[in-house]
Length: 73
Image (spheres, helix red, strand yellow):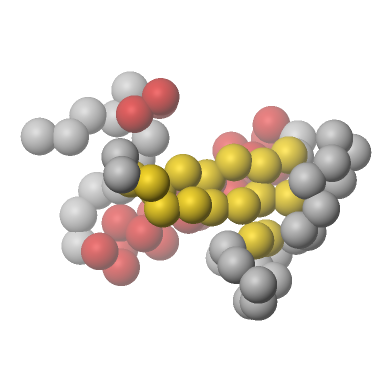
């Protein structure tokens, strides 16, 4: 994915989690993968869209966010 740092955990763009720094981090939780970060909405929507498309292709089934109304059956 664009911005991958490739070391010291699942971070993109920066490991600095400050209000004015662009970053994304991920964590595996009991309910699934949690991804959070700080960037402009338009850029976030493009990045997460690429991520869900790539994850869906790699896993062979649809991947999405429950907060966006994505349902699992």
